[in-house]
Length: 298
Image 1 (cartoon, rainbow, N blue to C red):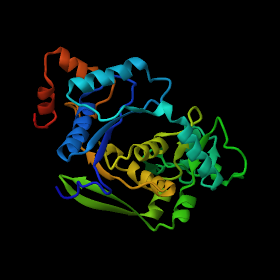
Image 2 (image 1 turned 180 degrees about the horizontal axis):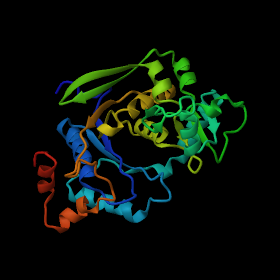
Image 3 (image 1 turned 135 degrees about the horizontal axis):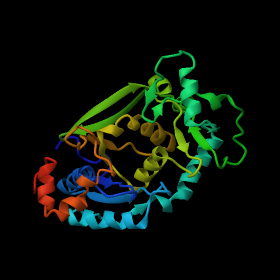
Image 4 (image 1 turned 180 degrees about the vertical axis):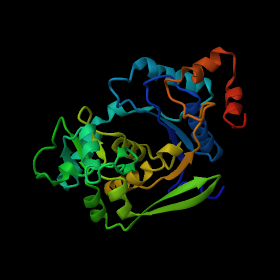
C-alpha cells in the first residue's frame, strides 16, 4: 500500500499500555491495528510498558497485559521496554533542554492556571489545548539559570516560543496514513504558542511526562509508524517539535477511531464490563472480539 513503507527500512509499530488497570476492548483494537500493520508489511511489532504513574502502576496489571495480549494472538518481536528503566534517558534530555534555555521551572497549581488564564477576560472561556487549559506563562518571566543544575521537585515546562525560534520553523507538519495513503498535515508554528502553550515535560514527582517519554521511547525503539487513538492527534504537534529538537526521525502516524460504549463515551479502565477478561470469561473468542470492533478474523 502507498504510504506504508518505512522511511528508512523496515516498518516498526508499537503498543504502549499503562499497567494501571484492566485492558479493555479499546486497548485490544489499538494493539490489533498496530500488530496487523506490522505483520501485513513484513515489519516488527514492539511492546512498551508505560509505567511512569508510580502510584497506580502495579506488577499485577503488567502481568495481565502480557497474558491478555498473548490470548488475543498478539506477539511482540523484542523484550518489552519499560519506562521505569529509562529514567536516566529522560533526565539527560531534560538537562540538555535546560542548558539550552528551552525549559523553565513552574510552581503553578491547576487552580493557579485556571485563575490566571481566565483573568484577562472575566467570564470568557480560557483557551484549551491537548493538555487542557493553555498555560498562560506565569512562570516564564522568572529568572532562569541554565548553568545551574536541573531543578528538582518542581514541574518543568517547554518554552514553546523559544523552541520554535531555535528550530526556525514557520510550519509544523507530520505525515499521517489513512487506509494506506499518506497525508501531510500542516499547521502554522505560531498556533502552537497560543493554542498549545508551554507544556509540562517533567512533573514534580517524576523526571518526565507523557510528551517527553513517548518521543524519546519511540526514538529509542526505532518506531517508524505510531499507531494510537484519534484523541491524541493534537498531541502530535508537540511531539513533532520535540523530535526536531532532539534530532529524532519523524514517524508516520495512524490515529485510529476510538471504541466507545453504547452511550458514545470512550472506554476507560474503570469500565470493567468491557474489559478483555470479562469477555473471555463469558466465552467469547479473540475472533469474536475482532468482529465486535470491526476487524477481520484473519
